[in-house]
Image 1 (cartoon, helix red, strand yellow):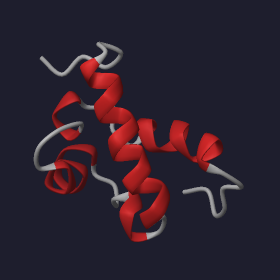
Image 2: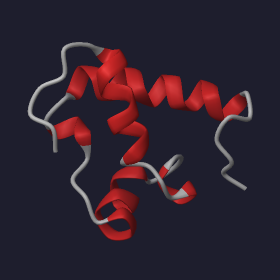
Image 3: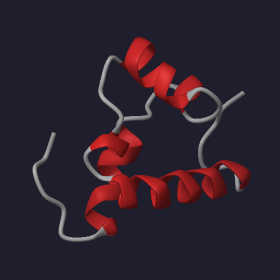
Length: 69
């Protein structure tokens, strides 16, 4: 995990990379991150950027950028 991000623009690619599997993009994301992706949720280290990332990713899902079905 990268130690520091200067801004959200630097953080977001890391955040998306942590959610490669479509099942970790919605619903029980923490469960999916631990047991499907096998990584630690970014929320623990970057709570503010992670919260923003949730909403940005959700809006991108609604616009069809990320396939979940």
